[in-house]
Length: 405
Image (cartoon, rainbow, N blue to C red; front, side):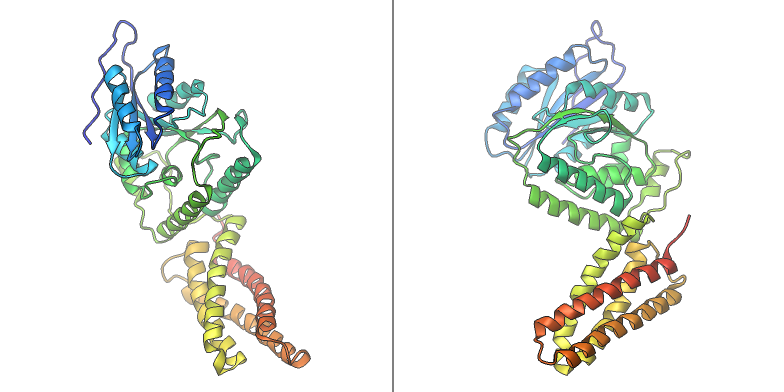
């Protein structure tokens, strides 16, 4: 997709101090598209201090959306329309933003859930150079939000997860009201892998880790009752995206230092792409590693059970203990390389010894006091013993590996 054309200058009415592209990504929105675009155009033409373009980004609609977009672009010089052959909001934003030659690129949802009065406070700090990225937030003091308790709970839970797992400090990752300086977008977008709903979160996390300044604007926001977003599928996608970012940061595969260098921002603080060091975040990541280790333990235990309960328990616990320590070094505590690796693994094996005593002792107690217990009871007892051993393991590994500021 080529660069978007510069609109005709209206020098008598508005000297061009900056150009802002407002992208509206759409999929099957033929019923609401015209009213939303015309309403946005009317608002911007009445006093918006910058030059602007409204860009309809149709991502593979199967209804009459593209025809409506073409008619709007033909009749309004401030409206432009682009068509993509593949679905995905993130894909549409990436292509439209990369094709833009505007000073600032923004986007908003087609339902205009966010009060348009927040648009100027959103883009002004970017035009002035004060900030690099700007987001509307429904969760900050001063915001006014009308939506159901279910969506409110989901939104707050998701942003809490981002703060604990990724150390994010921005308050609202998914509000459909954002803007970026074009030079910043050109550097960040090639690093963003997601093409759908996690796109916003990934962009913000990368920007924050690169040391860029994120400006937040409290917004008035009204929920769209006709939203067709699949909450379950979106949640699953978000969790996969968070896990992918954690792996990328832990493995130092995301070149954020290059972003800082290419933007020529020597004043930005150096950012090490590790993992946040807060207790809650570490506990959540330790829990995720623990769930995977527990599943692997029981798979090995059941596979080796014909060799006897004690032997199967010993082998399964030893194998998963070594893997668990290695995973926690990288993902939970952000440690890579071989420094102190031996000490960490020895500490992990010591915790393994305690876990072995707890689980073996519970099996022996079960055999002594309930010799006729079935396999299900045996597994339940092991789960309880492993839970106690896991808590002890977290405390010991944190004492060994936690990097104190």
